[in-house]
Length: 450
Ligand code: AMP
Image 1 (tube, helix red, strand yellow):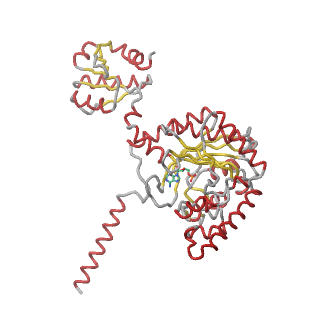
Image 2 (cartoon, rainbow, N blue to C red; image 1 turned 135 degrees about the vertical axis):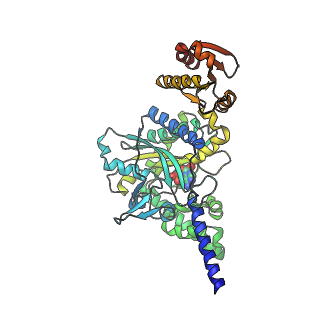
Image 3 (tube, helix red, strand yellow; image 1 turned 180 degrees about the horizontal axis):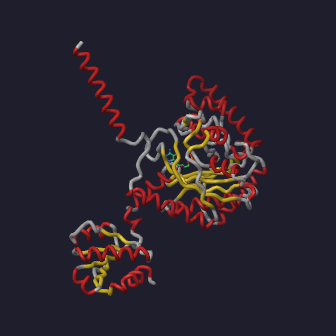
């Protein structure tokens, strides 16, 4: 009896310490973005914002929580994203909400709710932020991940808008130093021609499965066996070995799309050809969401099967979520994967180096002068770094070195007395004395050439 009591106490203790351990870690598949990571996220935000500014996309931020039905109706009930991956919750007021697994449906909701169809068409919007999917975490796959995206909603379903979306994404990847991007493009047709293709695909898979008897897992995985009946296009999107290998025998949608869809695809490709951008036509690229029609595309790096981003046309989405039919096209770029690659190329100091000037002091009087001078530089828009908490000059210069500062200002007792500041060029090691009253002007001249 006494032994049993001891064991129970130990179990309780273990449960308690397991709970404490959990308190001290992020949920599975989620991570902190620490200051050393955040510089990369800032670079991504800045790059996306510059492209948006150039092409005239307005910044939009939708709530992280939306009604779960929005995604069920927009993205599709039979998609992995809604069926398996959505973080859904019931509020105290009994509302079913979901952490957004993607933003396109939410942006279309906002377009309709805010009467954006009354604005000059099309409306160009871009976004940046966290998204949530209950997936199996692995390299480049998280449960909280970040996307930036560009959407063009309204107006005519003109192929030029598909091309503008594709080029915006390419510019973004270039700015993030992703080289040799491979673009895969396809058309998944419209309601009419896709329905015919779906039946063709169902017939093909059913016939193949019937012919192999018990070896049907050589044709499709068990999930896809079910999908053949519910959503056969999803079979082409499945990443399981059997499905990937067998799909090359499947009929190609490009052989079956109708004339208007063919003309649309030709239009998109002609615009892309104008820019001499290489692409691959992949007739088995379908993307996992229900709202796409006609153009779909994905971006990869050479030798990797993890996509950096993807998108396409979604002319039916507005109608699917209860609005009036509105042509639209967009792209979502996965920042976590892009930043993982950028991090391998650049350190955060490379990114942060942007002409920051370091200020070092020797002695208490110089510390006060340095503190006041930083304030003056702030008012003049010059970026400074300091280590005023350190007293030794050597320790301060170590920080300047670590931060890759091209220039260090040094104030010692003599400089306080003489009203001067030493400028040290960190590349050449050359030092000069400059009057304190002229220092801002001099620094600006050296850094910005003005
Ligand atoms: P999707 O909305 O599925 O088309 O995703 C667009 C891009 O977001 C993908 O190409 C990935 O780069 C990225 N992405 C999607 N899901 C995840 C995830 N779970 N973890 C990290 N990145 C993701």
